[in-house]
Every structure is written in C-alpha cells, then in structure tokens.
Length: 319
Ligand code: CP
Ligand code: NVA
Image (cartoon, rainbow, N blue to C red; front, side, top):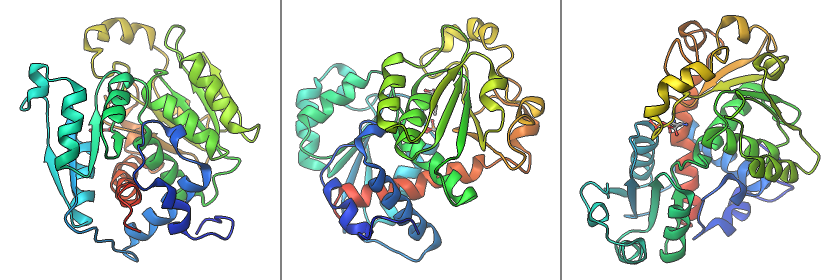
C-alpha cells in the first residue's frame, strides 16, 4: 500500500466526487496514489464496489478497443451500465451543438467518457455538462492511459520515486500525459522524438513545473540517449488516429525510432517494455520486444480496467 500521509483512500479521493478528469494535471499526487491503492484492491478482489444502477455515456468519435471495453466492463463491475452515444448514431453526427447535447445527456447519464480530436471539445462538454466528464483520449492527452501505465510500473518496481521512463516516438497525446503524470509521481520522463514531432513546449513546461524539482522531464532527438538506463521503455504508433494520410511521411521521419531489441538493450537490465496499443509490429516496436519476457503490454492493457473502475468509483462518489 502507498503512504497517503496517514489519510485513507476514501478521504483522499472524496474531493474527486463530481469532478472532471480532462488532463493528467487534474489529479494531485496523493489522489493518483489513492487511485493506485483502490485499483490494486479492485484487481486483487479484496474490494468490491456497487454504485447501484449508475449510467456512463460513451461519446467516441474515434475507434477504440481497450478504452471502450475497459470503461464498459468497469461500469458493469460497479453495478452500472454504459450507453453508447457514438456520434454516428446520435444527433451529434448531424451537428447538434455540444451545449445542447451535454445538457440533455446530463439528464440521462451520471458520467460521460469522451474520445475526440480537439481538447477544446472536451472542455466544451465540461462547461455544459452537469455530470463528470472524463478524457478517453484527445489529440492533446490520454490521461486514463497514463494512470494505467504508471500503475503497471508500480506493480513491477514497487516504488516509483526515482524511476525513469523513456518514451520513444511522437510527442503527442500519450507522451504529454506521461510527462505530466510522471512529474506528479516523481518519475523522470525522457522523451525522444524526431525533429518536428517533439512534445508541445507548453506541456513540457507544465510538466517541469508540476515536478517541483523532484523529477526531470527531458526531451531528446536521439532514442539511445533517452533509453540509456531507463526502467521502462514505452512507445506508441507513429501515425495517430486522424493522421493516417501522413503515414508515409512519418515512416520516413521516424526511421531509427523503433523500440527493437538493440535499442531496448540500452535500458536497465530489469527494464520493462510498455506500449499503449494498438501496436504496429516492425514499425515503432519489434515483435521480439513486444513478445519478450520484459514486455508488460498486456498487464498494462488490463490495468486500464482497474484504474478506470477506481476513477469511476471516485468521481461518482461511491467510496
Ligand atoms: N490504448 C488505447 O487507448 O487503446 P484503444 O484505442 O483501443 O482504446
Ligand atoms: N497516439 C495514439 C494513441 C492510441 C491509443 C492515437 O492517438 O491514435
């Protein structure tokens, strides 16, 4: 169990009742640690939570396997249900404004999880909805993913403070949330991106400021420099959802950024390999690394369920 300065999990998470989770920066370090404790109890079966028949609305403008299914299963395990509000089948797809949609859905649902392109769209839902809004991935951030990622590291190493995660690839949503969440958890985050694909300077600065000088957020253009001595080596696709037409250009730009056996061997001997999935074997990661004994990608995927169940319980006030 994590030290929460003597406070219990329920007390630490109480302020999250009714809150949005739009960015990794929306949580305090102790709240992340409490979510880890709760997720661990939910995962082991030591804790069961029944929220009664609460409803999660899923508004997913992009494809999803892990996020969608883990939210659905988490809600079912909490005794609730999920309503699929895919814009393809709702009036959202015909241009009904968010300011109307968000208010109407707030009358039917208890919480919304939204996957879309612009972070601003999420902020608009947050403004108009009277129920919690959760970021299920935007172009800017993937904060639910980062919770599962650092939880997976914690399962492996026990203690996160002083550990280093290297992220090799596009400096976008996943990298942004890793930097912010890592900073909050005293984990050094070393990003390596090709020139022109670095993380946003504003997010790098935000993460550095949140780290409170307790961890380092570094950006390299050489993958080897980022990986050397790291405890976890993480990568993500080179062309994210919505960037499919840049695939050829990106394949060229990201040459040398594949997490293969050679690059991975520069990490700490006990390092683990992580990937948010879906993966393109032979591009950003080799089949050998993803299938190796060092790979934790399927534990990482499973942990999405436990962290989101903990998060839903917290924002719905079921603790
Ligand atoms: N990692 C992740 O978010 O996967 P999905 O796109 O399948 O939800
Ligand atoms: N960066 C990827 C993450 C997928 C989970 C994307 O946005 O498509």
